Amino acid sequence: MKLFIIDSSIGRKLIMSLSGLFLFVFLTLHTFLNMLLLAGPATYQAGCEFMELPVVTVMVPILAAGFFVHIAYGIWLSWMNLRARGEVGYASGKKSQTTSWAARNMFVLGAIVLLFIALHLTHFWAKMQLQAFMGGAEQVHAEEAYGLVATLLRNPVYNLLYIAWYWVLWFHLTHGFWSAFQTIGVNNSKWQPRLQVIGIIYATILIACLTGINVYFLLGCGA
Image (cartoon, one colour):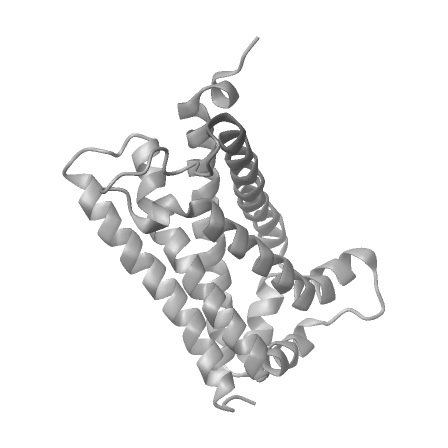
């Protein structure tokens, strides 16, 4: 028996849309925590300790799971499209003059985002949450997290690579936001332009905050 959610175009896009909204929530939480870096080590440590509360430790993996479903399913859909049509493009379908650049390049943008997520995980998650889960002696604890972030972001190469990644992510988010709502039914002529503007504003705020943190440490600020 075929499943609508997997075997239909609308069903597949629905999975991508809903899992993509998990990405927005995850990034919002992540950005809020990182903004505490600007307030100093003590405040950031308090934020890290908050993230260790039971309710948060349950919520974050759920959001992260939705995030990774979005990535894995997007790669699979793009591969299926490549085989079926000889071209990559889950989001875009046929190219047209009205299709945005971000829509036509969602797979490429997503692939770049995925590569930097892997880099990001090796820099932080592998040294903190993964070590805690495995009981590793080299775990970076909450009181050491500020120093870990500051040391990395004071390296100009990594700092600028992260900034470039943020703005690739911006293109992915600005298209993905309104596209997700369009797929779940909010697609009338009145709301679609509004959602496009909201998506641009929301993504710009997130990415500007992350970029600001990088610039802060690149200029030698902070403890």
